[in-house]
Length: 226
Image (cartoon, rainbow, N blue to C red; front, side, top):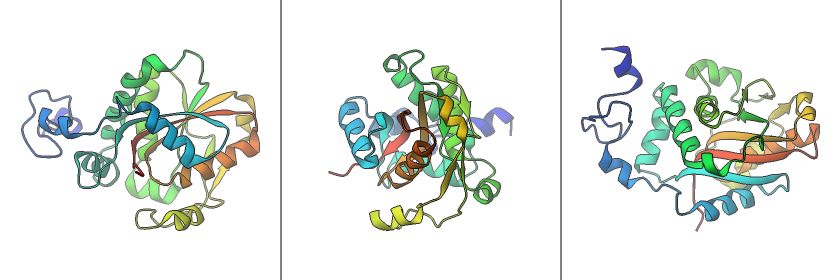
């Protein structure tokens, strides 16, 4: 098996159909079933900003609406549990291509990926949010830093928790660097936003270092709350 095949599979990661364009993760049919946010940008941005609920968050962007049992879940599962950080890089670039004309040059000083605890990063071999941020950074030409914020607690998975439990699970989890004091605006990058608890807690730690900082959220998927 070639290194190219390891990075870009010859089969669709969702249905196993052979892909003629090896630089794609899913076939045309599965891609057509993904609920891209192209026509939902304003609704999705409003939802994310409401979920986080902090005045420092001024903008938000998502690649798709996350659907359980859908192609979107297959992609996220591959990224998080099948040792495919290249999936994150690829989707991060795809998000960057989608929103490039909406990001004013120089409006964001730095991209910051949501950190994972060092034990979880060691077990997985990488931080999935960091791999997304690398693709986004390359596409938007915005520098990325992975040493501005740290996760100090290795909490349980958020997957099966309700909204209040999620908030409690990540409480006092992050420590932000004083280097945030030298920035005017940042972009926070994560994989999927559900309740907003993780991003909310991370933003609070950053605000402690810089109360006037402006924050934009970038995620691959958002769970709709209709």
